[in-house]
Length: 117
Image (cartoon, rainbow, N blue to C red):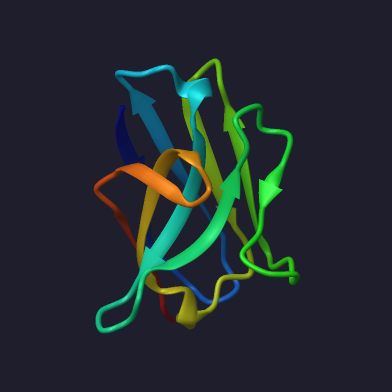
């Protein structure tokens, strides 16, 4: 499956962005999809994931932040809605798909998000 991430850009602190990840070339509902992010010199960080049917969100820890994830299986698309953005949210955001939460085998190319005044 091929993944195409888009929607990144420059936003002011406190602003919002919605990222999109469009899949092609496979059966979209076979896959769990997740968003990760990475900044130079740091390890890649899991942001949020979503189940095949879109009914369950996978969180990185017990704390729920201001981001939400959703998917439209008719459009083969997963969205990451990012609200109340902070400068520390600046990163390249990647979407990934896999058949388990421990093995994301397919990755998109990344989209840059910059939060700055």
